[in-house]
Image (tube, rainbow, N blue to C red):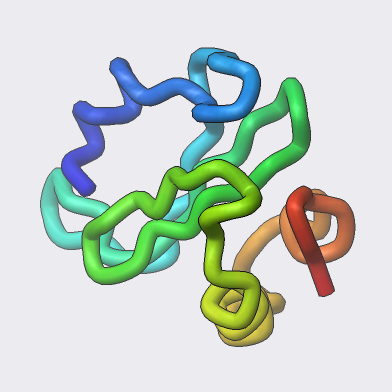
Length: 89
């Protein structure tokens, strides 16, 4: 995900803007892996292989999100790991 996209992305649930971004791996201006976080509704959206996965709860892949959280539990803030919606560890 190009970092400049952060200027236009809003939470698909409540349309909150801006979102917080946590970079786990990046190359120049591209986030390869990371997370977006809505401070209004406490939802997280993983960035996997440069793609922000910003789907409504009912369309999200719970297993993919849990694997992502488990993989990055030591790198992401606790508000994402322990408290984020739609699920957390």
